[in-house]
Length: 73
Ligand SMILES: [Zn+2]
Image (cartoon, rainbow, N blue to C red; front, top):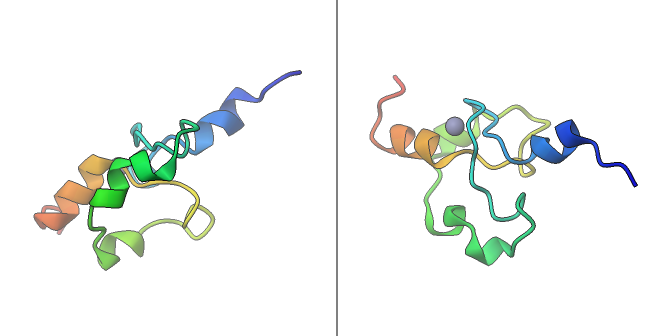
């Protein structure tokens, strides 16, 4: 069986900056274990995620932290 590395990789990178998002779901672990379950995502940040990536690809922790402290503007 062949696995497509690009497709496999797609869920593991932040849709905003392309960095590794350390998503537990993408890594095949339980969503409960994901850091994002304990993190608040600002609505303004979620709105910047491309529609096709929404609810499918995790934003990375760094982007969330930057949005929370208001660096992005
Ligand atoms: Zn990011």
